[in-house]
Length: 139
Image (cartoon, rainbow, N blue to C red; front, side, top):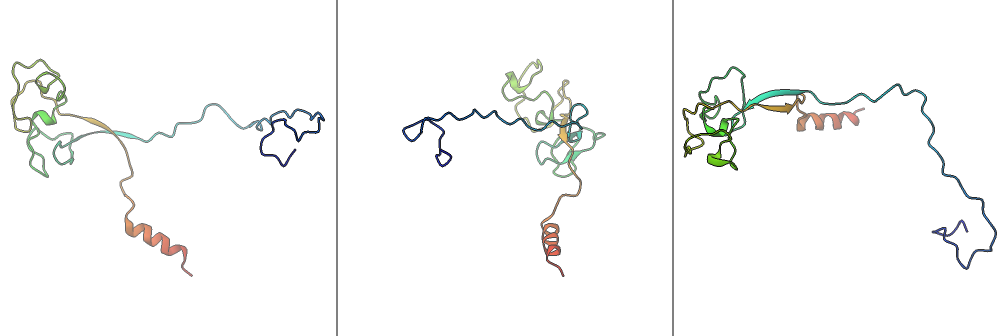
């Protein structure tokens, strides 16, 4: 019966009883001391330009983006900007601001701050990968 794919009883059985097999339990680990530590990446709070994505300094005033010149005191850069809400703002403003990318004098303005996962500063370049591959086969 060991050469059969499935262990279903059928016409090929001779009728003898086989002892039931108990499932094997995994070996117990005695060296576990409490819960596993979390391997979470670090986080950082940053502000990014809504136009080009450049990281802005925390002390950046509401002027223009240093890279692309986008107005930072605009609806697109605000924390309360929401295209799905009334007047595209979560705050109770009196009238709709037409241009969301132009500078305005909204009293509810707050620079949008995001929490991002902290990654390594030195990203792996193609040249580094190629050098590592070539080093494998050096004599």
